[in-house]
Image (cartoon, rainbow, N blue to C red; front, side, top):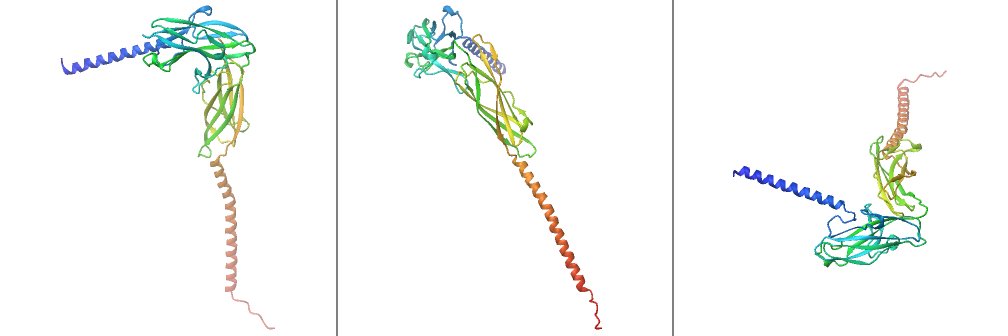
Length: 358
């Protein structure tokens, strides 16, 4: 075969293999994303799903509405895709929002006081043979004094010992979310705390600079909420207003959660006194996934800004206003003194008139 043709054939074959690998990887990602379990980003040797039961099949997660003192039963299905038996711990845990805005579940050793304390698996662990599945029943039992509102948690499976497999699953856990609505008055509420406006200024005395608005969103109600945000900065009496660009909605915030936000605002005039305004629209999502925007709430703060470049220009101008007349007065006085001296010299140079003795 001709060397050039051989190299061309090899390159085409390599490209074809690469395309096949990419397609297989894409199909694998799609298959992972379609699963009902809240799994880790990489593969593990088992999978979990919701049991069919009275709540219907193919649920992506658990969602319940239950009055204080109520009780219900459900189940978790564990499937072993590996080649060795799996011994898994099964437990419930409270949920929380991470600093990256993701919902996570507290570790097994952490104390849970809500969903994690109200959900009880029928057994603390389960053994699943290779290629088989096991259903683990669990109950949700609310205390009589459970406060109304929305709660988030989950039911989790994790390896009891890292050495039970080849070690690739060490430290992994899979969980499914449990969203629980306790009957009673729902009071959604968000507040803006620690609102601050910082102005960076500009060397141009007549130009515009940048401001940074920072604040914390606090879910002070008893409902799970997302915040839609708008931020603006204005001068005295609402003039010279500038609105920040589009801000992403906050993640879902559980009751009591906080979320820190920092927003740049460009093209702000140094107007001595700036007013920063944050407007929040709480977004309430029900069990069916419908989103309802609630009444907007606004919070403002004020910040003094000193346009140093302009102030220096004004000071220099005032100095000129004072210095120029003074210089003129000094020059005029010098001219008058010079005129007087010349006049005196002239008078001395002129002959004096003679006087008679009569």
